[in-house]
Length: 307
Image 1 (cartoon, rainbow, N blue to C red):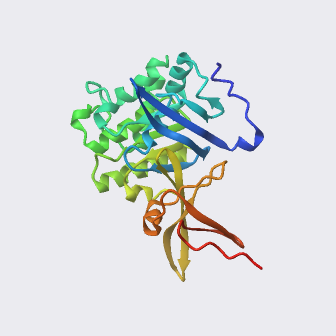
Image 2 (spheres, rainbow, N blue to C red):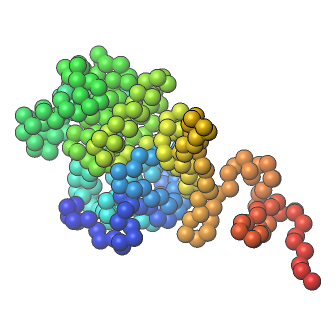
């Protein structure tokens, strides 16, 4: 597969940079099978910044690993920039990871080479791609300036704070100018103030460089600052919420509109708190009432037929 020639896709999908349809991932260990993703659907527009949230084991990190080319799906469709991640060869995936996607891990020590300076860490991916030392150093300085570390160029990771290490890691992830940046819990080991600063860096990069940013996070403070948040439950997208700004007189306030996601087969996930409150288990009654559908407990009285 030639990475410079993305797969042809229907015109209706041109605006989506990431497209997952009926995506499955099954891990096999001896006689045991674990289904991490169960028919997941996801669409992300080019240049969008969005967050993925979910409990541990919900499948969000598995999804991020697939989008980064670190793991391969078991079935379904997953494309990034028109490239089919299911049909890539091993060599294609290596090239994809080097040029098309940047990745930031939660563990700060995992992102950086400990014996290299900040600038050398950012230069390394470019040098491995054959870029001359001069241009690599110039771009490394530019990226570190953008993330606010122009004064820490020569510092090694052990001389940097956790927040500074993550800023360097973000610069490293963008060294080869990838159009997609994936961040797996980038603020998970940081205090709230430093986490907010990291989010501001990611937002600036999204706005100034146009890079598509997908963040997996447990941090509600970060999620609340992002325009679109997707929640995963049991390997499927369960809800999407959109950040809105409303005004009362001269005062502005922010709120989130939350929607249940309906997939192509008509399935939707009812929020867990609703299930518990209504005691919904194996079955539920549904009724079409004008312009909406009612979901009722199984033992609710059936609707009387009209005479």
